[in-house]
Length: 260
Image (cartoon, rainbow, N blue to C red):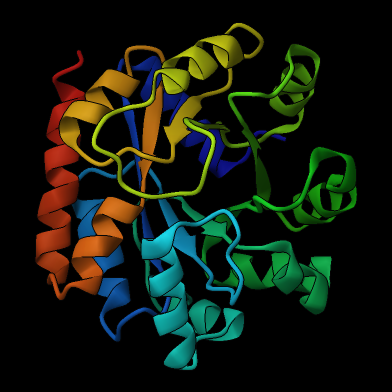
């Protein structure tokens, strides 16, 4: 299945563009959908929407804090879908959440729900390759692309299987550890992106630890693009306006455009 997300990212990559996927935690503040629109206007190629969970095991302190605050406001998967169903942005939206929420709702109900919220893909970081086939099939039936993750320690044979089954793009986890801003780009990020690109022509994006335009540009020496989350959510948690978050995304966009 080549869905909306993969088609969009392939087309933009093939035109020579480096790809930018920022992240926002759904329901974090009352104006979070305004942040979504600001990110799209600032040059995002797709946007990750975090559906908060109480035990986000892959996330560091910033996204943990954002998830906890969103939950304290009464945010649920259904409330995020309801808010997104009234919003239209001209970029693909990607749900990012944990399998507990999917399992509790049921695969088809969850996938059909995120489609109603204009989301066309999902990242489920705690669902291993060996256990994800049922979800992948049910998601695909609802029109949802499943983006799979690869880590720096992923063996070559497993990397090939991940790349073959991933849809939308292949998510290269740039370092061992949890999400969060870092002072510098890990050497492992470029090495992993190079390894993935050797086994697939799907877009390869690096996430985890990308904080600045300079780091995004460095990551794209090997990768097709980047996912940026904690650096944006830190400012949003600290009170930055949607416009200010949009300006931060625009700075990342300019940094990537300088790669060309």
